[in-house]
Every structure is written in structure tokens, then in C-alpha cells.
Image 1: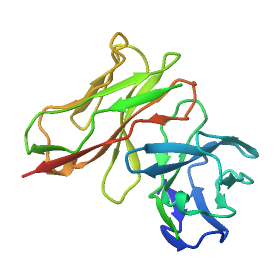
Image 2: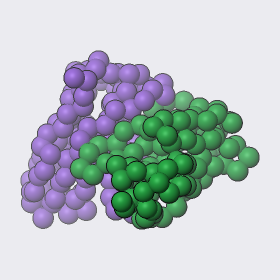
Image 3: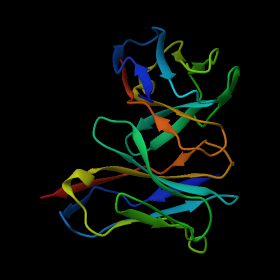
Length: 113
Length: 112
């Protein structure tokens, strides 16, 4: 089944403890992206990647890192999480970077205490 | 910069009622426009899209027409069902590639 998977789905952690949220897609998509969803703010893009080893900042990149070493994986790294990073995170992918439909993962709900 | 404005929710309707969710946008170029739907506990799914002025996107009984003169892309459905209860997001891309700018979302609640 074609899909985008994220792990973990739920995570409660403490301030300053490094964490990684994994994202993987099995559709051979070139483009991948991370969004955060907050009440009253909709979805905002954190980082995106047009292909392997090519990443760029979105609208709210502060406090996050990403890497794209392989086509299928696009992990989101929080080196020192803070409570303002408590949010619902979505990974998405599309066939290419040129205006294809984006497929979204199921989301990761992160709480930073 | 780009922005998308949607009507605030929740929108509460009875089954078989007519639905309109308003969406207007601001963009520097000629954007493509999208509606995404998020069912409870799930990720977003593309509902419909339109890539140029006067295009009508349609899917599952929903439709929206790209109106350049009013910079709008309102979502409509003639007869909603309980299963349509979800959050609906209007979005645009005017950079020619897949990065999207989303509105804040509108929750739709349909009662039997």
C-alpha cells in the first residue's frame, strides 16, 4: 500500500531532550516536507526537500533540523525541544517538486513539558 | 507574502443541507488552489484542485471554482452527509512547486 508513515505517533518528552521523528514513504517520491499544525494557525511548513541531499527552510524552521540521506526517509530532529514546539506534526511527500499532489502521513502529536 | 483566509468554524449543518466554505487568497503570481480534508485522527487528503482561472475542481460531490477576479476558491456541496464531518483546509501554491500555504482550516459538523 502506498503510504507515508511517521513514528512515533505520540510522544511526551521534557525540555532539552533531543528527539527524532521519523518519516518514510514507499512511493519513490522526490519531494518531502514537514508541517506543524497548531490550533488557530493551520499548517505551517517547517522544512522541505526537493530530492536527496537537498533541503531548505520553510516558514518556521527555528529549533528544527532535517536530513535527506535517502530518498524514502526524511527525519525531523529537535536538538533541544522546548514547550513551544508542542504541536501536531505532519510529514508529506509528492512525486516531484513540481506541483504534484501531496500525500500526508498520519501525524505525530508531540508534547514537550 | 502569500496568504489564505478561510471562514471560521465550526460550521454546523443538518444532513442534506447545502454547504459553502469561503476561501480567499493573496498571492504574487498565478497560484494553483487546493482544498484538503482532514478526518478526525488522520492526516490531510487532497479533495480537489484547480490550476488556472475559471477552472472548476470537483470530487465526491464537492466543487470549487477558481475566481481570479475575486481571488476566491469557495468550497460547495449540494447535500452534505454525516460522513463529511471533518476539517477543511484551503491552500495555494504559487511557486510552481509542491510547497503549500494553508488557511487555518474550517471544521464542519454534520448532524443526522
